Length: 360
Image (cartoon, rainbow, N blue to C red; front, side):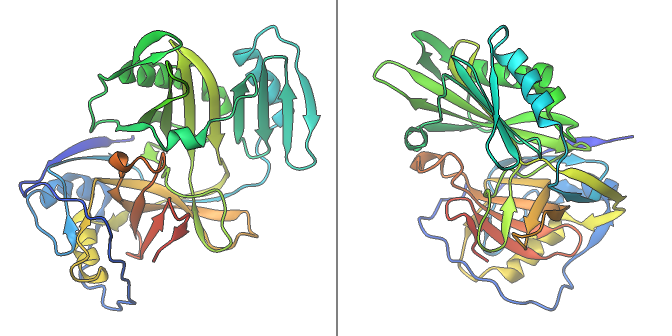
């Protein structure tokens, strides 16, 4: 039976100040004596032991939510074909543009495109798909000028004018979550749940805004990391996320679901690295004086791809330490650095969404 615990950490130290530049340092530390392992159940029970603890090179916020599943697996997967894309595209068209005639064409790769008079739908072999009303694409330059809200951290009461009507961030998030769970689950692979992670309001003209909602996928009750990039020349972290953009009260103008995989094999993991020892390990791995300010901690499945020519990979459970969401800088929808500590072997790495690369 799956167990889940939401742990709210109230760290008694003063709130950390963000620093403009972060010193990045990593070395091959052969002494992993600080790494400790315990059963998943024990890790959940003991995670709040970090409350009030101070760490060198690491600053924790006053409050922190940690979402932990009671059952953790090592998952072997690949990105080969896992859906009948023409069938799924037709079903999605019936949901989003009922009654409209749609013409389907191949684009010469693993994607097909469906177009109607008012919308376009793209569907890929790996269940990646996108919908855009009136062939709209998200104006990413305007996303950079938007205001971002982190679910569970920021107030969602702010209201914006969408298509001439006031609409709050909370209303948009609730609608996006409800639509995803009630309508989109037949198109999603491997999901045991969905949860909104963030929202961004951005101006599209002098009078109106759109609201972009990013949702996290769950596999076997454990969240899948949304940090990463589509593909790089070198090793990269592949994100898995669902985004829904709303341009009017309960009106969706864009959906994008990224990067699903076939699960080939699952092996239940009995023991993982404890949160306390993961933080102690980072003390040894990070450069003195680097002062990383952590805004979020989660235990997630992460898809690290080392060979861009291979479609095979593993979803590995990792402690994910978000250095900052940099919401006030408004430079991107996901301008994060995430430090990863592999929950099986303690390996440390850091991926920058802004640079789209591992920085160590």
